[in-house]
Image 1 (spheres, rainbow, N blue to C red):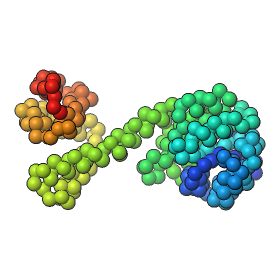
Image 2: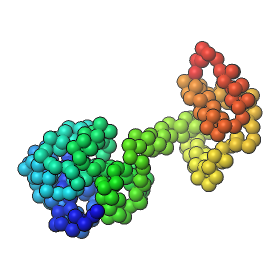
Image 3: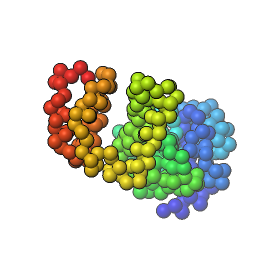
Image 4: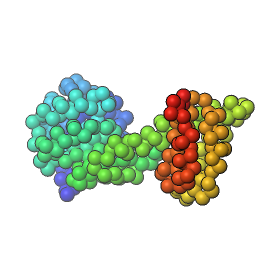
Length: 279
C-alpha cells in the first residue's frame, strides 16, 4: 500500500498559519520529501515552503493532484475556509490520502472529502508528551502511523469519528480538572491553611487519587467498599458555598452512579436536596 512513497515527492501540503511549528514542520528532513506547497495565495505558499525548507510553492491547490498524500494544517478558524479551497481544487482524490495534521476538522468537512473519493486521517498532538492521536480510514491511517513513526512518537489510535469524544476526555482530564484543583485549594484556604500550603495539599491529594486509579481503577475509589456516613457527607455539602455546592453534590452522586455502589446513601442524599436548591 505504501509503495507509492518511493516517488521523489511523498507529500503535498495545504497549509496556513505557523506550518513550521506543526507536525509537518517537525518531520525529520529525510522524511520530508515534500513537493507542492499550497495556500490561499502563491505568496503565502512561498513563505510556507521557505519556513519548511522543503518543497516548492504551488500556484494553486490544483498542483496537489500530482501527489498521493496531502498534508493539511491550519489554525482552527481557518480549517473550514482552507478546506473549501482544497475541495474546489481540480484533484482526483481516488487513491489519495488527505491527512489533517495538528488541527481538528469537523465531521462535515471530512464527509465532503469522502464524497470526493478521498481517504482521510487526523494526526495531532493532544498534550501528552511522546504521544499523538491518530484516526481515519485504513489507507490514510497508514500514512498517519508513518508520520508518528518518523517523529518517534507513540500513536494512540482511536475509532473513526470518535475525535470529539476523545477531545472531551482530554478536556475533562485537563482544562475541566484544573478548576476542581483550584476549588479544593480554596476550601483548604478557607479552612485556615496558608496559600502555598493549600495549593501543595490540593495538588498532592489529586495526584494521590490519580495514581491510585492508575494502579487499581475503580477499586481505588474511597467508598468502593466502605459505605460513607450519610450525615458527614451532608455536612460537607452544606459547608461548600454556592454555586459550587451544586456541582460538589453532583460529583459525589456521580461516584455512586458510575460505580453502582451504596444506592441507599445516594437516594438519601438526593431526597435531602432542596428542590428550590440555592446551590
